[in-house]
Image (cartoon, rainbow, N blue to C red; front, top):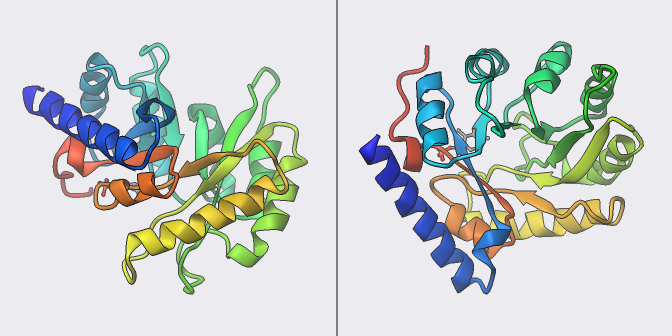
Length: 228
Ligand SMILES: *Cc1c(COP(=O)(O)O)cnc(C)c1O
Protein backbone atom coordinates (compact mmCIF):
# COMPACT_ATOMS: atom_id res chain seq x y z
CA UNK A 1 0.00 0.00 0.00
CA UNK A 2 2.89 2.32 0.73
CA UNK A 3 4.44 1.57 -2.66
CA UNK A 4 1.06 2.12 -4.25
CA UNK A 5 0.68 5.51 -2.63
CA UNK A 6 4.19 6.52 -3.73
CA UNK A 7 3.52 5.45 -7.33
CA UNK A 8 0.19 7.25 -7.36
CA UNK A 9 1.73 10.45 -6.04
CA UNK A 10 4.62 10.20 -8.51
CA UNK A 11 2.27 9.82 -11.47
CA UNK A 12 0.03 12.63 -10.25
CA UNK A 13 3.06 14.91 -9.95
CA UNK A 14 4.13 13.99 -13.46
CA UNK A 15 0.61 14.66 -14.76
CA UNK A 16 0.54 18.07 -13.09
CA UNK A 17 3.98 18.89 -14.46
CA UNK A 18 3.01 17.86 -18.00
CA UNK A 19 -0.19 19.88 -17.77
CA UNK A 20 1.62 23.02 -16.67
CA UNK A 21 4.27 22.53 -19.35
CA UNK A 22 1.44 22.45 -21.89
CA UNK A 23 -0.12 25.59 -20.42
CA UNK A 24 -3.03 23.64 -19.00
CA UNK A 25 -4.64 23.53 -15.58
CA UNK A 26 -4.02 20.11 -13.98
CA UNK A 27 -7.49 20.24 -12.44
CA UNK A 28 -9.00 19.89 -15.95
CA UNK A 29 -7.64 16.34 -16.13
CA UNK A 30 -9.29 13.15 -14.92
CA UNK A 31 -6.81 10.44 -14.02
CA UNK A 32 -8.40 6.99 -14.34
CA UNK A 33 -6.53 4.11 -12.71
CA UNK A 34 -6.81 0.96 -14.85
CA UNK A 35 -7.09 -1.99 -12.47
CA UNK A 36 -7.45 -4.87 -14.97
CA UNK A 37 -6.04 -8.23 -13.82
CA UNK A 38 -5.71 -6.89 -10.28
CA UNK A 39 -8.01 -8.02 -7.48
CA UNK A 40 -10.86 -5.93 -6.09
CA UNK A 41 -8.69 -5.42 -2.99
CA UNK A 42 -6.51 -3.11 -5.06
CA UNK A 43 -9.55 -1.01 -5.92
CA UNK A 44 -10.22 -0.65 -2.19
CA UNK A 45 -6.64 0.44 -1.53
CA UNK A 46 -6.85 2.99 -4.34
CA UNK A 47 -10.13 4.25 -2.98
CA UNK A 48 -8.58 4.70 0.45
CA UNK A 49 -5.90 6.81 -1.24
CA UNK A 50 -8.57 9.05 -2.75
CA UNK A 51 -8.95 7.50 -6.21
CA UNK A 52 -12.52 7.75 -7.51
CA UNK A 53 -12.10 6.87 -11.21
CA UNK A 54 -11.13 3.32 -12.13
CA UNK A 55 -11.12 1.45 -15.44
CA UNK A 56 -11.49 -2.10 -16.72
CA UNK A 57 -11.33 -3.58 -20.21
CA UNK A 58 -13.01 -7.00 -19.94
CA UNK A 59 -16.72 -7.26 -19.22
CA UNK A 60 -16.68 -10.35 -17.01
CA UNK A 61 -13.88 -9.10 -14.80
CA UNK A 62 -15.43 -5.65 -14.77
CA UNK A 63 -18.88 -6.82 -13.63
CA UNK A 64 -17.47 -9.10 -10.92
CA UNK A 65 -15.09 -6.49 -9.55
CA UNK A 66 -17.64 -3.67 -9.63
CA UNK A 67 -19.96 -5.94 -7.65
CA UNK A 68 -17.29 -6.71 -5.07
CA UNK A 69 -16.73 -3.04 -4.30
CA UNK A 70 -20.30 -1.83 -4.77
CA UNK A 71 -20.17 -0.39 -1.23
CA UNK A 72 -17.58 2.24 -2.20
CA UNK A 73 -19.54 5.45 -2.41
CA UNK A 74 -18.83 7.72 -5.34
CA UNK A 75 -16.56 5.31 -7.18
CA UNK A 76 -16.85 5.79 -10.96
CA UNK A 77 -16.21 2.86 -13.31
CA UNK A 78 -14.90 3.50 -16.80
CA UNK A 79 -15.25 0.70 -19.31
CA UNK A 80 -12.37 0.88 -21.81
CA UNK A 81 -12.46 -2.46 -23.67
CA UNK A 82 -14.20 -4.04 -26.64
CA UNK A 83 -17.87 -4.70 -25.95
CA UNK A 84 -19.89 -7.56 -27.41
CA UNK A 85 -23.37 -6.37 -28.27
CA UNK A 86 -24.96 -9.05 -26.08
CA UNK A 87 -23.01 -7.74 -23.06
CA UNK A 88 -24.43 -4.22 -23.37
CA UNK A 89 -26.73 -4.59 -20.35
CA UNK A 90 -23.92 -5.84 -18.10
CA UNK A 91 -21.65 -2.99 -19.13
CA UNK A 92 -24.39 -0.44 -18.73
CA UNK A 93 -25.37 -1.79 -15.31
CA UNK A 94 -21.87 -1.54 -13.83
CA UNK A 95 -20.37 1.41 -15.66
CA UNK A 96 -20.51 5.18 -15.37
CA UNK A 97 -18.66 5.94 -18.59
CA UNK A 98 -18.13 3.75 -21.67
CA UNK A 99 -14.99 4.80 -23.57
CA UNK A 100 -15.23 2.21 -26.31
CA UNK A 101 -18.34 2.90 -28.36
CA UNK A 102 -17.17 1.97 -31.85
CA UNK A 103 -20.21 1.04 -33.95
CA UNK A 104 -23.83 2.01 -34.44
CA UNK A 105 -25.07 -1.46 -33.50
CA UNK A 106 -23.38 -1.16 -30.12
CA UNK A 107 -24.90 2.29 -29.60
CA UNK A 108 -28.32 0.77 -30.31
CA UNK A 109 -27.61 -2.13 -27.93
CA UNK A 110 -26.48 0.16 -25.10
CA UNK A 111 -29.56 2.29 -25.62
CA UNK A 112 -31.88 -0.71 -25.74
CA UNK A 113 -30.27 -1.99 -22.53
CA UNK A 114 -31.40 1.06 -20.55
CA UNK A 115 -33.89 0.20 -17.84
CA UNK A 116 -36.37 2.55 -16.19
CA UNK A 117 -34.54 4.59 -13.59
CA UNK A 118 -31.13 4.24 -15.27
CA UNK A 119 -29.27 7.50 -15.59
CA UNK A 120 -28.04 8.67 -18.96
CA UNK A 121 -24.85 6.81 -19.91
CA UNK A 122 -21.78 8.87 -20.80
CA UNK A 123 -20.09 7.47 -23.91
CA UNK A 124 -16.91 8.23 -25.81
CA UNK A 125 -16.46 7.27 -29.43
CA UNK A 126 -13.35 5.13 -29.85
CA UNK A 127 -11.39 6.03 -32.96
CA UNK A 128 -9.01 3.65 -34.71
CA UNK A 129 -5.77 5.59 -35.29
CA UNK A 130 -4.26 2.85 -37.47
CA UNK A 131 -5.07 1.65 -41.01
CA UNK A 132 -5.74 -1.84 -39.66
CA UNK A 133 -9.51 -2.41 -39.43
CA UNK A 134 -8.81 -5.25 -36.96
CA UNK A 135 -7.83 -2.78 -34.25
CA UNK A 136 -10.45 -1.40 -31.92
CA UNK A 137 -12.29 1.76 -32.84
CA UNK A 138 -14.28 3.22 -35.70
CA UNK A 139 -12.56 4.37 -38.88
CA UNK A 140 -12.22 8.17 -38.87
CA UNK A 141 -14.30 8.37 -42.06
CA UNK A 142 -17.31 6.92 -40.21
CA UNK A 143 -16.89 8.94 -37.03
CA UNK A 144 -19.27 11.76 -37.88
CA UNK A 145 -22.17 9.45 -38.67
CA UNK A 146 -21.56 7.41 -35.50
CA UNK A 147 -21.61 10.65 -33.50
CA UNK A 148 -24.93 11.66 -35.06
CA UNK A 149 -26.39 8.20 -34.52
CA UNK A 150 -25.41 8.01 -30.84
CA UNK A 151 -26.42 11.63 -30.23
CA UNK A 152 -29.96 10.79 -31.33
CA UNK A 153 -30.31 8.08 -28.65
CA UNK A 154 -31.82 9.65 -25.55
CA UNK A 155 -30.26 7.31 -22.99
CA UNK A 156 -26.70 8.00 -24.22
CA UNK A 157 -24.71 11.18 -23.86
CA UNK A 158 -21.82 11.57 -26.28
CA UNK A 159 -18.98 13.16 -24.34
CA UNK A 160 -16.09 12.96 -26.81
CA UNK A 161 -13.49 10.64 -28.30
CA UNK A 162 -11.13 7.94 -27.10
CA UNK A 163 -8.12 6.27 -28.70
CA UNK A 164 -5.10 4.08 -28.08
CA UNK A 165 -1.88 5.27 -29.72
CA UNK A 166 -0.57 2.83 -32.35
CA UNK A 167 2.86 1.30 -31.74
CA UNK A 168 3.99 2.09 -35.28
CA UNK A 169 4.41 5.83 -34.94
CA UNK A 170 5.24 8.48 -32.33
CA UNK A 171 2.30 8.85 -29.96
CA UNK A 172 2.31 12.64 -30.35
CA UNK A 173 1.57 12.34 -34.09
CA UNK A 174 -1.36 10.01 -33.46
CA UNK A 175 -2.76 12.16 -30.65
CA UNK A 176 -2.58 15.22 -32.88
CA UNK A 177 -4.88 13.47 -35.35
CA UNK A 178 -7.14 12.57 -32.44
CA UNK A 179 -7.52 16.28 -31.66
CA UNK A 180 -8.82 16.75 -35.19
CA UNK A 181 -11.29 13.87 -34.71
CA UNK A 182 -12.43 15.52 -31.51
CA UNK A 183 -13.35 18.55 -33.61
CA UNK A 184 -15.25 16.31 -36.01
CA UNK A 185 -17.37 15.00 -33.16
CA UNK A 186 -17.88 18.50 -31.77
CA UNK A 187 -19.25 19.59 -35.14
CA UNK A 188 -22.13 17.21 -34.36
CA UNK A 189 -22.29 17.38 -30.55
CA UNK A 190 -20.92 20.78 -29.54
CA UNK A 191 -20.21 19.98 -25.90
CA UNK A 192 -18.51 16.61 -26.52
CA UNK A 193 -15.16 17.95 -25.36
CA UNK A 194 -13.66 14.94 -23.62
CA UNK A 195 -10.56 13.32 -25.10
CA UNK A 196 -9.63 9.99 -23.49
CA UNK A 197 -6.01 9.31 -24.38
CA UNK A 198 -2.74 8.47 -22.72
CA UNK A 199 -1.55 5.33 -20.95
CA UNK A 200 1.57 4.63 -18.90
CA UNK A 201 3.86 4.98 -21.91
CA UNK A 202 2.39 8.09 -23.47
CA UNK A 203 0.32 10.17 -21.07
CA UNK A 204 2.70 13.11 -21.25
CA UNK A 205 2.24 13.32 -25.04
CA UNK A 206 -1.51 12.91 -24.61
CA UNK A 207 -1.68 15.82 -22.17
CA UNK A 208 0.25 17.98 -24.63
CA UNK A 209 -2.36 17.07 -27.26
CA UNK A 210 -5.37 18.04 -25.19
CA UNK A 211 -6.32 14.79 -23.44
CA UNK A 212 -8.88 15.31 -20.68
CA UNK A 213 -9.08 11.70 -19.43
CA UNK A 214 -5.93 9.64 -18.87
CA UNK A 215 -6.14 5.86 -18.54
CA UNK A 216 -3.13 4.80 -16.51
CA UNK A 217 -2.49 1.26 -15.35
CA UNK A 218 0.91 -0.21 -14.61
CA UNK A 219 2.68 3.06 -13.69
CA UNK A 220 0.35 3.21 -10.69
CA UNK A 221 -0.67 -0.39 -9.99
CA UNK A 222 2.74 -1.93 -10.66
CA UNK A 223 3.14 -4.79 -13.13
CA UNK A 224 -0.05 -6.68 -13.92
CA UNK A 225 -0.37 -10.25 -12.62
CA UNK A 226 -0.40 -12.92 -15.36
CA UNK A 227 -3.75 -12.86 -17.06
CA UNK A 228 -5.92 -15.77 -16.05
C1 LIG B 1 -4.65 -1.59 -20.12
C2 LIG B 1 -5.15 -0.35 -20.76
C3 LIG B 1 -4.67 0.91 -20.37
C4 LIG B 1 -3.59 1.12 -19.31
O1 LIG B 1 -2.38 0.59 -19.77
P1 LIG B 1 -0.99 0.87 -19.01
O2 LIG B 1 0.02 0.78 -20.09
O3 LIG B 1 -0.84 -0.18 -17.97
O4 LIG B 1 -1.06 2.23 -18.42
C5 LIG B 1 -5.22 2.04 -20.99
N1 LIG B 1 -6.16 1.93 -21.96
C6 LIG B 1 -6.63 0.73 -22.38
C7 LIG B 1 -7.66 0.69 -23.45
C8 LIG B 1 -6.14 -0.44 -21.80
O5 LIG B 1 -6.61 -1.62 -22.22
